[in-house]
Image (cartoon, rainbow, N blue to C red; front, side, top):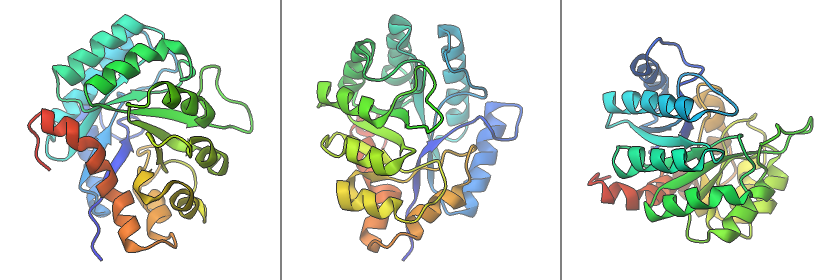
Length: 263
């Protein structure tokens, strides 16, 4: 079976190149080797755990540069920080309402169960933008503002109309899957981490194949190692196609339709 593949989680950081356009071209070169048709990309050419509004805007400008060069291959998600609420709302409107971006990326500046996120999540839902939230459970201890899947469960309960993506499924995926299971508006992004046997099978069993998304975390991780989580899983081909592309298409279809983009 030939699978259509859309990657929900890629970055410009960690990729060779001196400009956003050259880094995007290199990402697509690698993606082409693996038959990946579309990439969702967020955050700029460098990272900051606690970005200022200026850093946030620059990062988003870099992603928009990259996406503009390859409009048929890449979608941009706007990078926001809840520590700067008004600046983030302004950025959400600039990049999504008035710009080409179709989703939101939140990282580690603040735990996502903090009420400071509420205005951002509510506005994203109004714009039909999906929200990807980094989530991890680290045995060595999380960063001060780093969210867990349990934090995401609290956020989802407050915003049942928002579409939320749990990036990495919390790293500790056995606990992460259980934490998000009761909340049908949270989707498991299985990117990052090693391709451990049983991860995808458990996600499908506990959440249903319609709530699982393929992502790579490139350039931090290889496309091949992350695709192995799907191709090597003991699940039907119909479930693999949902995970590899169809679920993401369904989540993005409302905002793409608003922007006049046909799939």
